[in-house]
Figure 1 (cartoon, rainbow, N blue to C red):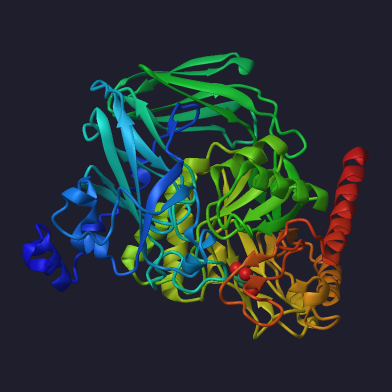
Figure 2 (figure 1 turned 180 degrees about the horizontal axis):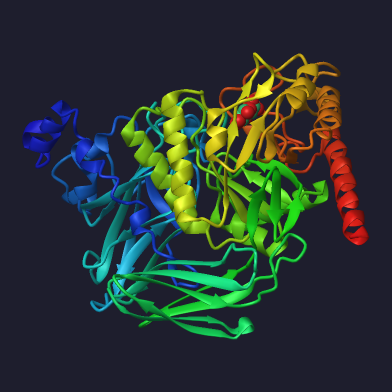
Length: 605
Ligand code: GCU
């Protein structure tokens, strides 16, 4: 076969070249290339794509992406993969959820689809946008490599201007979800490693000069009287943008110099809050380009150990959530999202911790509309390769992509730079730099991380706390920590100078016949842990919120005892997203009590 293949040189060479992937690791698809999408028309590329798993990266070695369509009878060599025929999968999807044989597959997988263009306007620019791809996504168009993106939960754009032609074009994505020490997250996590193109894919066209970024916010100076708009333009250095917020009688020109501009405008908007989720229709124009958004204006700050929203101290009545579904995997639908918020409302929440990675952008949009506060997070989780500059670059890029995507969302109040990381000098440098990056990109929000407890002297103690605004406290007294009374000691021994949010606490509880009647993993034991946690935490004055772990049971490879069967059962609701456990009502009752106390305090004031 090798001697007569026109791929023979390549095929033979590919068998000996273990650096085959280096040319495809440019990470050139990153936050720099993100395009603001609010109100921008696009054509969906969701639907059936040809699909093939590729465990040994044969495709990169043999350059499957350069194969041009040929009828099988015309081929002069045996292809190991047929990009144009064969098995198809729906996009968005996670391959693990589609076929038993792909459940634990970790490697590369190829997605291919045609893109037919009636014509290509040479005066315009064309882009592809991927909502997310788990983890490393290499993009090819008509046989050319256009770049790759690292990170499994943030969007990226690929400019294809001048590369699309009239008629049939071929898009190929090689998605690799292999776990490695230097990725973010690294190879050991407590959630399922879903791979694939699992969020929406689209193609869109823009004028030659376009609005690439648009950040609109209430100036956080405590006067609630000024709005600031920051605009970035791609394709032009100067000109005038026009900002319009009709309900505020704003129709403002923004002067663009060196590709950007900002303006501060006097305004007295109705303030956004969970009780009053006021949103304003906003539009922005530059030349031929038009974008829009629905933006809420509010101020979030920390004052001492208080989290203060629009001047009023808050208690965050929350719950943690993963993106996980028994059927959908990590794919998010509107129905799945809205069910999540309905259950949170039923629980009495005004807040959710979107763990441990950026969730679908619709989550924050719906939270804006319904009135929920959000903690959003990048997956700097457990023992990241903190000493590795490439790992930092990956983490920082994911953080910047998240902030650029969601910083117009009033519901987002906290950017979290990680979770439960070892207390080393490298980790401190890595995470305080991330916190500084977040603050620099967005001075209007708080920073946090799930920090550490010094169990030796029972105190909240984490050097990172000095560099973030809110201390996240993951504690599992009653579950992983057997001496429950130590929780009260932590309370007595700790004296934080900033707010603490219990970012995780809880216990597994398996419902019905699959769970034990009593003891660990029983529903009653879980309920008892919640009772004891609440009775202790309510006494800690510096605790300004909590997001117990977790709303729903979720899939994870590393949980395999007879009660877990590949699931983490700390959900207040089972994986069916219907069956509530006893602990649900225990927490709901506590939140109702807090809300009632707040209401009576409001009336008294
Ligand atoms: C940790 C971790 C979670 C994990 C949870 C658990 O705190 O942050 O991701 O799922 O504990 O062990 O259930």
